[in-house]
Image (cartoon, rainbow, N blue to C red; front, top):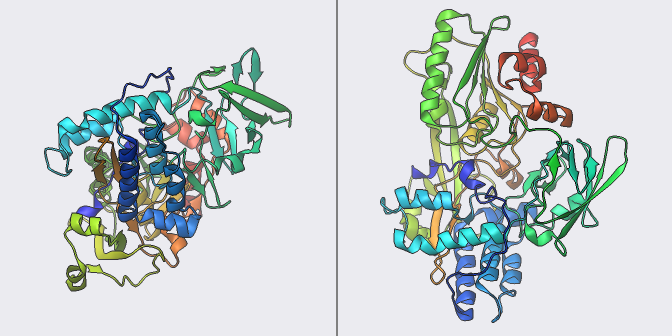
Length: 524
């Protein structure tokens, strides 16, 4: 089944992490006519509505009406609309789909498409027709984003600045809570950014969206300025009025990143003698890294008495499910499997792409119109049901019957998130940490589409995961068995310490998630 192919988070967010250099951009872009803009925008909206089941989930559960937003955005196209303005309307239309896998292609993904997808005939366009998109990426990088970098973090339901900084001669302390933006309560302000920021994260505990980089879109800088109000730990107010091309000066140097792929080195492993814990940190789901863990784990079993195992996937944006299967197959007692149920739109475009019709679905053993689980009211969909074995024990396994702890933060996605979901359904695996606040589950290989006149290229996620749901809200999928929330004080320590945050000393003395492992092991 090709639908289990997963896209890693580095590509999901790459268009947000474009270089922040802001320049006065002179439009030197390919031009299309006003009627072509209108027609092409209709095509874009039609493609998304035919392809993305996520927009129907967003409408029913999150009350984000893609069609309404798209209509309002189309009204902004006039005979005087410049090509640059049109490109921003296209980007916003993709944003209101509010799905991390539905976005414009960035230069990184364009390069991958040219190198792999086009030769394999996985897209309907050729390399020569990608030239315009490189120009559009460059323009949007310069025109869409502002320059400030404030290092905000969202934890325990609030935004804080991690580091002390100076701006225009005034000093601002670290750990200030952000109260408002442009005169509006910060949480109320961020929820207005549906068209400007995607994907907005979803704090399910407080039932609201958030985004730590909400200040990146240049459009929110009224008259070139953004007005932020903070409160420090003594409840003193601090106002920051910052220009969209300005930077702040930090008083502390960041030593460690906190986010996707924040550990860029290879696998890190330890054995903790007193607790009998084998620990492995894996930065990405790359199969060669899975092989490395397996080799080191086997060696540890020959030398030590291993009572429990920790797999640390914090910051792991995903890759291949085969990665964790390589080492878990040596230690799991039972097959890690799921009765997978996923949904796709039953639209003309999807029927043509996947070569299906009503008869083929009705006669199929895996395709169905009746999945036996709650379904979305909006959209005409078909479903794929399949028993899928994610990890099968090897014929020769290691002598192990202990717990396998999975440490996770909110920066896991794709196959890393799948491993977390497997933990929820396994007695032997236990998940600890933060819930990733993005729609999770099994995704498919995204569909790459080129608009006819501008040659703008975008991608759309064609699938949504209904596995094990009891109601449509459960489609979010991501869960954690033992929640551990970082405090702002720990995040400051984590990002500024000179110690190796995945070293034995830091894990034992300062890491709250590893401390939870030791606590659970003691209770055993």
